[in-house]
Every structure is written in C-alpha cells, then in structure tokens.
Image 1 (cartoon, one colour):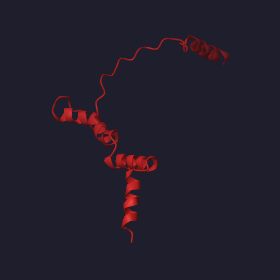
Image 2 (tube, helix red, strand yellow; image 1 turned 90 degrees about the vertical axis):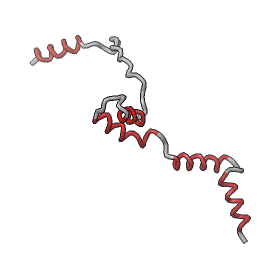
Image 3 (cartoon, helix red, strand yellow; image 1 turned 45 degrees about the vertical axis):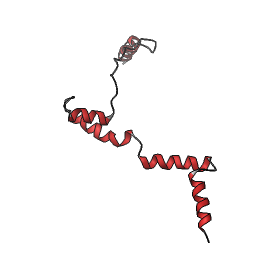
Image 4 (cartoon, one colour; image 1 turned 135 degrees about the vertical axis):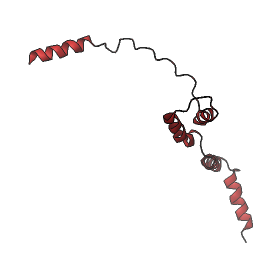
Length: 99
C-alpha cells in the first residue's frame, strides 16, 4: 500500500507548480457582434455553421439594451437628479391642469 502512495507522491512532485510558465494562448481575432455574424453568414462571407448560427441567434437580444429599458433608466436618473427634469415638469403641468 505504501508503494502506491510513493508512486502518487512522485507523480505529484513531477507536476509543474504555479511558477511554471503557462503556454501563450493565441489571440482569437476581432470579436464580431452576433448581428454581424448572422449577416456574414447570410451574405456568404462566412461558412454556415449550425452551432455558431444558433449561438448568434440566442445572443442577439442580449447585446444591445432595449430602448424601453434605456429610456426608463434615463428618465429615472433625470427625475431624481434634476429639479427641472421631465418628471418634475410633468408634475407641474398636472398641477396647472387641476381645477
């Protein structure tokens, strides 16, 4: 049994430690948006690959924020940070219309 542990210990000693240099990873090239990937496949510039196509279609809605979300976030920032913001102006307009 101790022979087994001696073999394991010897193999562990032969393993490179954290100070060993890691191999360099080649650059992946320029990153393309999923819309560009789909357009290049549709125009025949890139070969059609089913897995890449599915990934691009799945990632498409998550790459750019939706206009509604951007507008809501910007309006809330304006409403809380600016006394003359859109929300404050709407409130003053409502007050003027009340009988």
